[in-house]
Length: 253
Image (cartoon, rainbow, N blue to C red):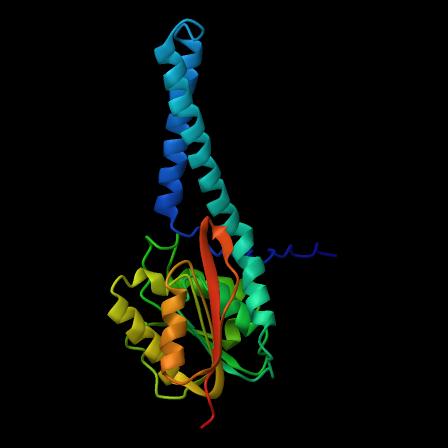
């Protein structure tokens, strides 16, 4: 009898490192600071030289601070954002047949999480795929994560700018966005993105926007549009900077 053919285990999803350049810079600065401290301690006469003592302190404490910041950001990218993703999505009452949009979907963190909750629905992600914002930020990696999570059949990935979403009015039951809109630096353009999100949401539909900055702006725009149940969460410190979740419901009339 022929031996059974070994099967290849499915790849694990990888949702990337947020702001990889920033993490790298903090890690390098931290390492440089500790190197300065080590040189001051081991090379110079530490006990008799005031300069050595000064260099030691100038290197040690900033170095540890930078390394701790890099570590917190890595933890947020690898673990924290998955936990918060599930908390946000668990706060939505799902029927299972919703049409969902993820604005700035990146490698599919929110997109795939939503798709797992809608066995009879559809999750669509749009992005402009800036690698500076997320490591490996490509449509192929997003699709690979959907396949790894077993939801490729109900995930669609498209190019799209948050300020000009390529969808008709009232197309989605739920619209999500995570750490994306702050990368629009002009406040007028950010407000335009929020209005676009509101435009494509169905009456009675819900939005959930997680971001490290500008959550007050997002909430204000939604309130000006007459949305109901507009709320800002307590701060979360996944990436050192306090971040919040804005949730709201579009009125039915």
